Length: 468
Image (cartoon, rainbow, N blue to C red):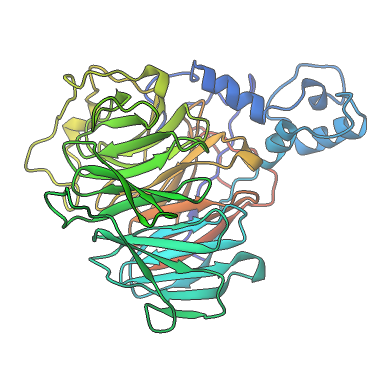
């Protein structure tokens, strides 16, 4: 593919566990992230020291796969096998940057691309109300084509239930629909070939029942849905009772994104156009709309959040053109220092970000690190942690309005890969939970698949590299 421009770089110095090359598009603070999460990440992705030695000498990272295998066969660690961290160290070297290959192309903007938890299915949502489910294990074969019901403007989000039996989809409407995934019907036309049940998120106490759902997530047990809405609220829907169980007037502006913090479902994270990330603890609501804590740092609205899954850390994409890493133990309760820097005439949907604003910093920034390089314009660009199984969550990655996918090293902040192929904003991208495969979905209508290069190169920062 002549239009594909892949970027690989090799750094001259790879000692001390991570590259010391300069950071293009790196986190704002120079040097490595000096925080507990850096150590936790290393514990998940750094091999046993003896596995790196086939002969006496200084232990350097990254360790080549050959040395790792020699160490394992020689039982240098005394365990006789690779640990999960050893495996992550090998697998995380193979970034999914080769390709891409088109999975599908539609005459409609692609808004969502998500793997199922076991990686066997891929769900893609398109603006004109079409949701397509592909069977990954059967050569990305189309398994189900869902023609959605009651779509306002676009499919804003989809989510597969933990047991992979049901799919929910949202749009700019207070009605979320749920459809069976495993039926024999390939073409699922709402309420004609299959029933698409409507889940009504409105209630008798609502001042305005005209709102849209921007994002939604299943709880780990599959009994609840949490949703972010355009009426500044968070909603929780009880699927067993088939009713809305909770409405939180959470923010001053649109709530663009929401997720559960961990598998317990007690903690909820939310992000809004009021520039704030908030933490909600359902076990100790004191008053309606009272957050457990607030995290400030973004200078513009929040477009997406992704939890690390441990109830402590999450990342967020912001319209200030940054991704930020957060520790909820740093959260505060005072929003008086929330800062807006842009001209009131600026609108991210059709204007470029003001150049002077790129150098501004929040006076009370509570984030752990800030990652720059990608752009967050036109649409609610999404970001994610890389998988725990294959990378130890060593990377974060994000779509971008400049039609690329960016991958950053969590600890150093270095941009380790940029995937260029699409002709329009990449709103979403998703890394396979077990294999080095990444899927990107773009407004050009293309769902593309990226895989590892198969050459054994370790990912390194983009500055001071040689092109192959």
